[in-house]
Length: 311
Figure 1: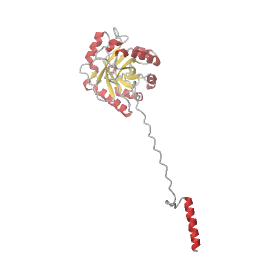
Figure 2: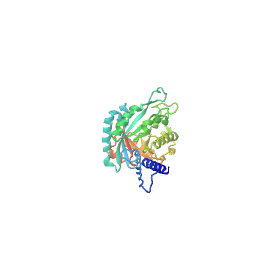
Figure 3: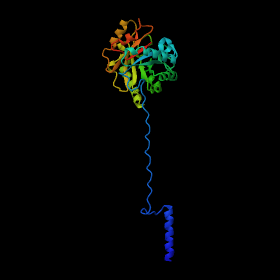
Figure 4: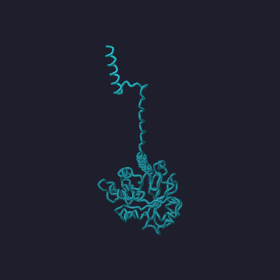
């Protein structure tokens, strides 16, 4: 009986050994498990940059722009040709300024996307809003050619923030900024071409607060915000305009036209009590200026404009 038990125990031990159970570590070297490979780091997408690189507009860049509405040549040079032809034209124009600047020169489009109207329209605001899909064609061409884009608002009886939100998807693109044109911001009872409009600093700040939050939320590079002006009355309480948003670069665009004396009178007047961190911009008019400044004359203006548009 003891012999049978001994044989049975030997058989059980053999089975366990074959199955890998009950191994004797002293009799058999243990297998070393292979080390798990280190997980590969998830690639992070690089944040978008501005034309020319970087995330800040100034002080390393200056911009030369065609201004206008795509469908109305009478409103500016941008609408006098196709999107591709506009790109070629503004690139050539920007190149004419390179010899007169220590900073990089970049082409730009300033596109009127809501247009002051003599008719109230279905919404009664005396402003014709362009379909963002129609503007996207110009923005796409601009992206292909490294052209900065500014969307210009002429809101009539509505407010700037309401109209800016219409173009939110376009403003989520890294090289698209915003322009506010108070000349066409009407008060109760006012009519375009009979009165010159105006806007309060509070309404400007409400709009720029929203744009700064949108820019930060989508990790976008700094956006340009242009305020058009040719009379002091056009921006009420201008000293209260907030220029502290790091997400935005604020620009005051002097829209004076006529003789050189007239243009400089407007230019000098608008710099009085100018808020800090406000960059000056200049406009050349093909038809109304007498004569129109050359690129060298434009950049000889003091202070040298950071943004120059052609209407």
